[in-house]
Length: 289
Ligand SMILES: Nc1ncnc2c1ncn2[C@@H]1O[C@H](COP(=O)(O)OP(=O)(O)OP(=O)(O)O)[C@@H](O)[C@H]1O
Image (cartoon, rainbow, N blue to C red; front, side, top):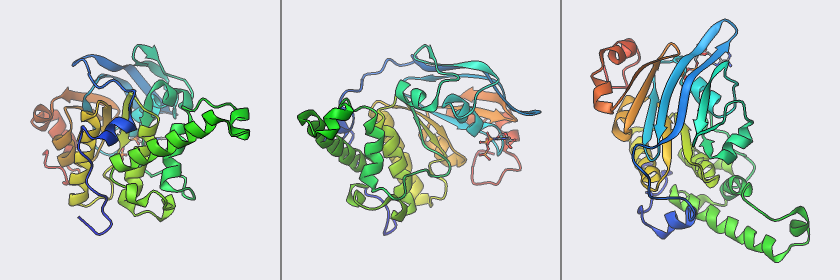
């Protein structure tokens, strides 16, 4: 662990985890679909970046979305989260269509994400960045906030407590007051995850969360992702590092040239000839081929 490495994540059943997400269902029915993606296509001019892709995300699982460079992984994320409008297809979250809805509506519906290139409010403190995520849940009216009603104070206090609990949950509470842009890189990545969790998502989408990490940091991140899942969240993970994907996911969907070429458990994916062929020639940090 480097000098600036975040603290280990707390115990799964800790009070911190309870405080971070007190209202979420913990018990999950295995196999139940949380998200259903059907024939999703995205076109950029003449290029079909995503070509009629279908897969489901089951409640409580960590699903990996992998594929060589340019395979369409981020495009799929962007189509799911409202950044891109798909040219066709459906995305259902708990049976309700989220295709074509605005990004903040999709977040409110329960889908949160992090970005490949970290997007934080650099001038704000780590705690403030998380409170932004919690803000959507506040019920105080503008008048309540202006005149500092008891309800406003109560919500403000709760937001600080919950924000601190989330920072502790991802192992960076010691830097709560630091400006986000001055945080070490590993802390910034964890802060993005804490901010996404603050929206109390049903599905947490992580876009290459280990990019730029050394092996020790990757190990710690895998532990954090497992903790998040074990705490009752469902996780969709885009990751280029095959070792990380194989080590942390329950199931993997593989894209190549915008099409789905496999959907299986990690062991079967590792032995799948089409997947091995797709990764041949890729830089070998993977161990799959
Ligand atoms: N906004 C865009 N405009 C035009 N083409 C795009 C756009 N975004 C992605 N593409 C193209 O769509 C294809 C899929 O890209 P995408 O970024 O989804 O792949 P990826 O699997 O996430 O790749 P990587 O692992 O390199 O991030 C690529 O050919 C890419 O150049």
